[in-house]
Image (cartoon, rainbow, N blue to C red):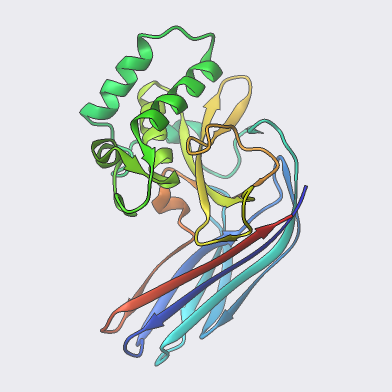
Length: 267
């Protein structure tokens, strides 16, 4: 399947920015199940300073904000050829070893609610890790109904389970936290999804990957109760959202900041 993606992020600052620096993880790479045919990032109100690959093998673009400016617009567009590999990505990539993805983070640290979920899962019988991980995905979706407005970017897996509602990012964090508690390496994935009912979207998508011996990394989209197929484009991975965030940075200057995201994914 060939997907056409246009992703625009617009920032407006109430007062002029004295200094600003942003890391953009907005460039997909050719990997198992996807071939990037073309991709470009255009910037208004800022300058692309350099590009590098981080320890997760993500392509990172460093962007400086023009001093004295009020607006920055980042537009990504390109075409990606995808295939349905039943969620299988395969062997690890990047400099980060598999064992690193046992590590807990503030967003994925297990507490009583995650431990209770894992205990419930351990009381069930499964034929191997793949079936166990599908069981975990179903448990997470049952515990956390998909609904916006209950969580935010800093909500931890425990916060999400306590709320009982969340979005794809939250589902991924709970899944990752529980998988690591089971002794299975897991990581966060940010990217794009071709929706069945619309092309215009207001945000990207997120899911999780777990490392299964003999297979490698396998994706699990808890929110849609499936393994990623040809409708998915992987962009960035990390221990959690913070490591795979599409935009992260800092600025010097007073006043409020407004961000508007426009995303179009179509076949």
